[in-house]
Image 1 (tube, chains in turn red, yellow, orange, purple):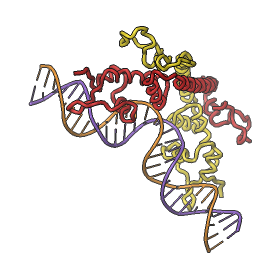
Image 2: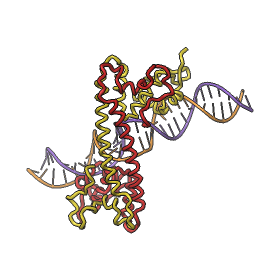
Image 3: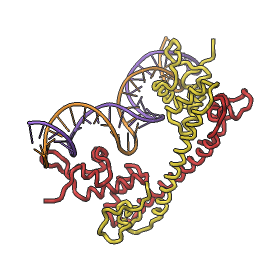
Image 4: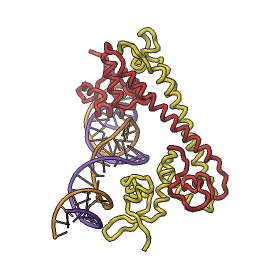
Length: 151
Length: 151
DNA sequence: CCTGAACCCCGTAGTTGCTACGGAGTCAAC
DNA sequence: GTTGACTCCGTAGCAACTACGGGGTTCAGG
């Protein structure tokens, strides 16, 4: 008779929400486990590891599809890890791009912050959104888009 | 007879996807426009401005609810802009936090990148996900969680 | 007058990755 | 025997769109 865990224990041990575990099963990320006579799912210790693997992958920002690939790779220890490395680099590139985006955004926002205008009429944010900020005069506001830089 | 635009023109002029415009109408972000005899929506120029306002707000990362607030603020030019400023600062804080998160993530990923292990067995990424990376020996891998720092 | 392209209408479902809800069955302890 | 904690299942909700399908309209060219 082998050690087995109910889904609640698995959840606590792996740090993955109970409902999320069932969700992973539904989408085929986790295999359907055997059931006890009462219908309860019975997991073994390796599933805890697998779920932790998944959780860490998610924390690193990998998508479900990518994690599926990574799980397959991890299950074939003799293969070289080009594919895993490719995923990491791809992901790293995306993260760096996102950081750049957010930095630009932060610049814009910090220029808009701390506007103490007594009237919303000349609030920096609202003017920016209205695009009135850059024209000066009210004419010709059509083809010249406000420099909320490439975001 | 007043200038009016069909939804397709509005979409091109505002830079907001046509289906998104109808979506904004459904969720009450955009008022229901009058209709032509054939049932087509008829918009005036101010709606183009309004949609651009919305688009820029979205590009700055504001949520729909926040944009709803900002639109109301913009419609009341005599009020001071505390509320707009609060939203900006709140948002700025969130953006900065997100940048920090992503920076930490980038560090972890760049340590994992460029792993040229000939076997997935010792691939840095897979070991990290498996949590084998930090123990050294195979025992005692349970209570000591791998330092994928606070993310 | 007819055809076909380019519009427009509407409702609904799909996306991502979960999370929550409701109603019901099960189990161990007191 | 009754509480309380657990489990089951299917479905719906979140954000913010995007896409699809099946239909009606408008207009220019032949």
